[in-house]
Image (cartoon, rainbow, N blue to C red; front, side, top):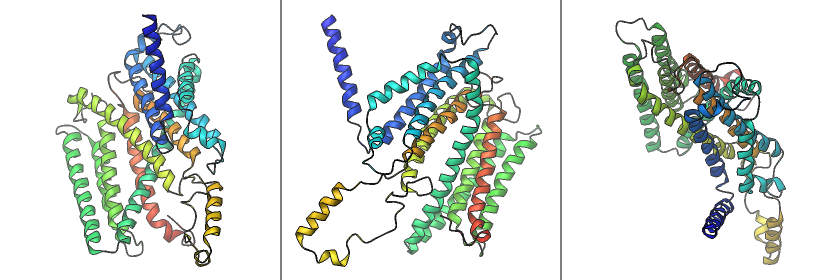
Length: 418
């Protein structure tokens, strides 16, 4: 039996080693995303079942009487803090990496067994810290989560403008028709969805002025986006305006659905269990996917700290000059050898990549802990007035940034905007 156990352990270790060594440079970003997703699952599990265990830890369970919700928040924050420190440390280590000859480039793409061990040790270490440290981290996480949401808004704006420019550059009638069709479709969905919100969150017989204000404001913003974008002096496009309008309507819905379940104006309060489960799953998937997209977007855009030596930030130059075509085969071979030995620049900023994951760790902690609010039921995820105002403010910031992206070239004509 001991021999069989040894064989099983050896085979398991060999499997982990082969998986870790099989992570190539192309899949490294996916591996980081998988590690982040694992931390979310761990936070979720400890949130659900870790409260009785944490009550037995003396330096966590002090003389004061704490509720179950408090222990759940502590479990989420401690896992999040370990995850945050892991990515923050790598963000600091990767500062200044510009080419693949840098030793730290191999640290970013390899050593996955060591990374998993370090990550696990950091998470475990967080459960030995005093409660005061975790409370401070919880406060800082609110600002970090807000910064993460702001980055997502900027990336969304960049995506909509890039999408519009890509179709306009094709300069074909079918693409112009597609632009118009998608724009009209997004606007129809946005206004129709806003009408559904009136039914869900403005039940008859109740004074729901705040909800009506939120929904009407979303519709006014959508209408204003179209007018500003189509104004002759702005030289904008309807596609970005329609996509942002649809996004604002969705954010308004997430904000209203986060209202307390006993609030009479929350039309979804009778579907507590279904909403809770779907909110958690959707929130986790959205966070993981948005972080991955943020990192990938950073690798193809000069907007987000791409290194100056990155191929994306360099100007377009011909691959071969006219004189080089006349050179002999020997000189070409020599130049090819020189190019192989030259330092290849990195394609994206490793520092920004890890920084985004660190901020996402804070955001996920706020998502799972209800923004550290202990007044709501522990069975609910991301519910409470704090979550409502975070979502609504995110919508308004998105609107302000979009309008600024349209009018900024008029206010500051001497500057270039991408």
